[in-house]
Length: 72
Image (cartoon, rainbow, N blue to C red; front, side, top):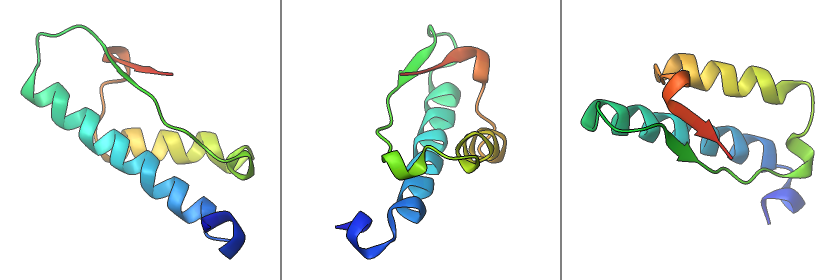
């Protein structure tokens, strides 16, 4: 539905940010654990030049520890 309405990139960006927000929360709550894997499904429409910037911004905004994260 989001693709049909042309909102998939906006929704996808929100999902990436929410995943990073939750990941950062888990890192704060469980500081001694092994890296935490996060899987985020994306639309083929998100496979563009903005995707890397979106992920980098989300990681920085939510202060995710990249070395303790695994994106699958």
